[in-house]
Amino acid sequence: MTDPMVPPTPPVHLQALLAREDLGLRRIAGPDDPGTVIRWAHASEMADPYPYLLGGELLLSAGVHIPEGAGPGYFDAYVSRIVAAGGAALGFGVAPVHEAVPKALVEACEMHGLPLLEVPPRTTFSAVARAVWQLMAQARLAELRRVTEAQQSLAAAAARPDPLRPVLRRLSQRLNGWAALYAPDTTELAASGSPPPPTAHQALTNLTQALRPSDPTTPAAGSPPAAAAGSRAAAAAGSRAAGAMGVPPLERSREWGRVGAAAPGKHRQATPTPTSASDTVDGTHLAAYALGAGHGFVLAVATPHRTPGDHTIASVAAALLTLLTGQLQSSTATARSSALVRLLLGTPPPDVAPLLGAERWHMVHARPDGQAPPDPLAAAALGTALGSALVDPAGETVRVLVPADHPVEPLPGWTLGVSTAVAPEDWPAADTQAARALARARATRTRLLRHGDRPALADLVPPHDADAHARSLLAPIAATPALTDTLRTWLSLHGSWDRTAVALSVHRNTVRQRIARCAALLDADLDDPDVRMELWFALRRT
Image 1 (cartoon, rainbow, N blue to C red):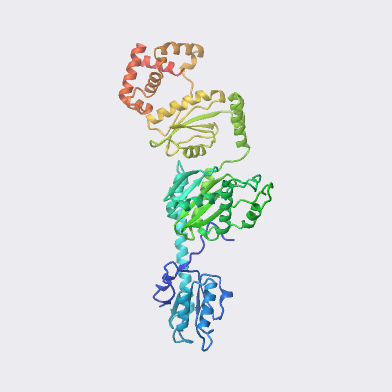
Image 2: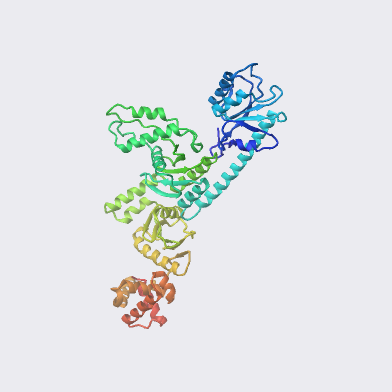
């Protein structure tokens, strides 16, 4: 069985064979098409070579089969049979049987559009066949090298913090085309490269619908236009799949035909869903690959040209994207869904938490490098890296609940703030801890900062008395959250104006004004370390 990860042997361009000076071949008839390729060389002296040809051959003959006195009719029939069998070109050897290529053969090849090569007496047919195989071996080695480099490039892209778009970008570059990821609801999640023409784009979208799991309950009669379009796309996938980008043909047409012919009122029978499909529209080669087992994500590719390694490269990208987009449809996913439903129905979080599989959790707040806020794809990739599906892309910050037994390590491209390990009833407090840790991490340009959880002197004071003292001390500024947050951040950063400005995303002069306002309202000397310590004690209780 052919390995789908190994590209097939590339064909040889006829021009490359004609360029071999050691052979001395000369084109004397037929079209001068630079796209003409040959897949192998075959010598035959049969008057009718049709039964012995597979297609794509350079047929070599010395004219032994030509009867004496043969006229144009013989050569016309001979050449037409070669063309009907899919022969790519004909090589006629001069001497010892014929001193020159018969004129009628030249005319027949010209009429039927079959390239005719003159093989000089010094060149043997075995030398021509050997040259073909040498050129094929060189082309295969070059294609294997290209595929290997593409695999390494795609793997490197998949290891990035936000891998989906880099993988699509590398794929479009390697194929010199366009690559897109379609969501289960048929929306285009991300794309890279030069988009195909509108007609080809629509055809590719229809092609992706053919790869989605069929609904056995869909009525056959009176179906809406969208379903009909999907059926047409499926039929196109089955009828045109052979050859485009090397995707194997989809032998589903008869099953789809039976589905379409269901009697009114009957329900369609579930049929196997193809995993890949291809088409060619307006000269653009289209291919689609289903990601995972029935999850609905589809990789779509459009290229202006087709090479044997394109399917292999796209298959590698499809495998990587399957890992990046796959969601485990298991008891764990079912438990998460159950937990969400119970929360929506008013069940307290501590009662729901056991469904999620951990007793203690870390809250992680994350901000990506750069100015742009994280999108859902980047947030999902972050959750995968942290080992949790409980991800909330909240504005510029992504929040992730991570089981305490999963280590949280620095991630390239992200700044992380991590809370202490807490029980579900303390999740709100952990959320506050993670937010403050993230603010300090950004201010100090630290990739990861954890909230401290070691015992402190403040723990010696009864919580009720500590809370009462904190409320009394901070009462003058409690009504202005901006002042409270600025004072807390400023104290945590040892009075640094610049770092506080970075952490709060404000100007340093704004920080100075707010701290001066706090000092005035609290009637306190903020340069006094004892005052700072007491205020920090109070702020930790709020």
